[in-house]
Image 1 (cartoon, rainbow, N blue to C red):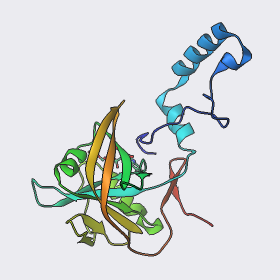
Image 2: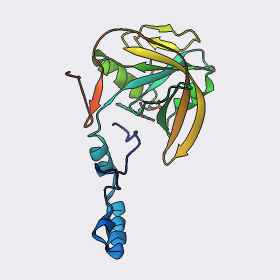
Image 3: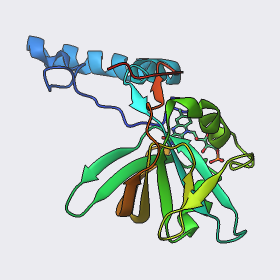
Image 4: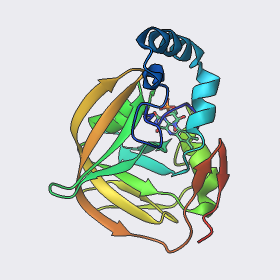
Length: 198
Ligand SMILES: Cc1cc2nc3c(=O)[nH]c(=O)nc-3n(C[C@H](O)[C@H](O)[C@H](O)COP(=O)(O)O)c2cc1C
């Protein structure tokens, strides 16, 4: 992920903490091992390991109430949370200049990007850019921007926000959703874009 955005799971394949040395019955060694592991988690290693978790990519969009213009950001931390009520979540960096604009809108749209939308993703990830330059888009029932070529969209409102390190975990309530264009998803894996081959 370009900015180390998705949440990490601290668990290994067995469901136990992956780096827990106490399994050998030596608590002292476990503490030292844990301290060494914590020290070793630098940004490059964190991104490299988390990059092995393949994700889709979404563009989260809204009409900025201050300007009346559409804006958005790219995110791969999107996931479904609950069916009843319908909730999804994504994580947003505290450094995002676009999130406060999206947050100010009553409704936003999560656009699930398709494989041909790599350039669209890069445009939404660029700081300070006109995120919608050259893009065709329509509106969801509540007025969220729906990007042409996206596989599907979900119109949401912010339900809850939880500070989590350098990001905010945003839980969003889904009000409307639909499929849009047929096609393959945009896949993000090991810091590169690819396609799904079923
Ligand atoms: C594939 C990809 C995934 C990303 N995922 C996230 C994410 O989950 N959360 C986040 O805050 N930023 C994420 N980013 C970074 C933002 O899209 C973007 O760079 C940033 O929000 C742009 O800055 P701005 O918010 O100041 O406009 C991602 C970027 C890329 C290319």
